[in-house]
Length: 366
Image (tube, rainbow, N blue to C red; front, top):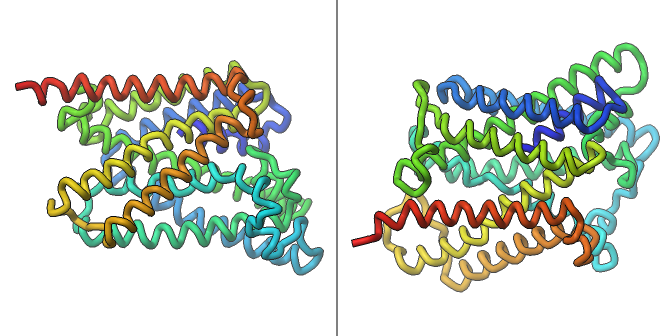
């Protein structure tokens, strides 16, 4: 959630306060974090329209990007070489392509979070698998369209991490009064979609944390619900942690792009670690509780499931190594931000593990 709001704050600052320091980005990010906390503490039927509206707006933005970039491509060609060899990571370009692996893996995170809304879904056995399947297809198509639009308009070496969207639409729309008005409108919609993404992530993650706490697997604080039946304990705690992360990295960085990348690295690294355990837990449960009734079951022989999980773990470890060593050198780990990222992620995993053990131990004692 922290890196997402740094990105949206970076878009806002690039548009309204160009040239401002990264502390303004950090401040706006913190405000957005707590707006998300307030939103997710509303009733589900009220706050769930935010991600739905954000999805519709996101489709509109991507289609607009694709159409405008096509016009530019027809008039002046592409700012980058668009060929099969330049897009697909062939051996000669593999080294420069793998650094984007964490972003690609990050795009796939969160598909399982919709399972946290199963109690609020009319027919989860039917609806959840369908939602996951179609989400994967739709998201892949729209990410591809958005990436191609960016590559047509801006040289890859000039793309900015936080201000790239503003620069893209400045090029696509042109330079006149109408274009400026449209730019402000579209960028407002972009920020709204990023906020909607944050609400969506918070809805799923906090409700799953509450469910685990209600079963005694997490501390009782996370099981607290407010009068709207929203997971208030989990949302407030997540807001506090996100604020601490933003402030900590803002103290150690000097630019908005650097702030975004370091918080993104920390967030994704911490989010990737549990997926290794998730793959292993899947294999364990498939062996020890294969006949247990489930809403849906992954088909295939055991060797295929081991292969799929092995590939998943390999990609996760690969992405984690790139986040920790962006230049491919062990010395990257000695950077102040690198040490904070590695140490902070490890400490948080150990804290969560100790909390789980302390919660589960009384239940397993005779």
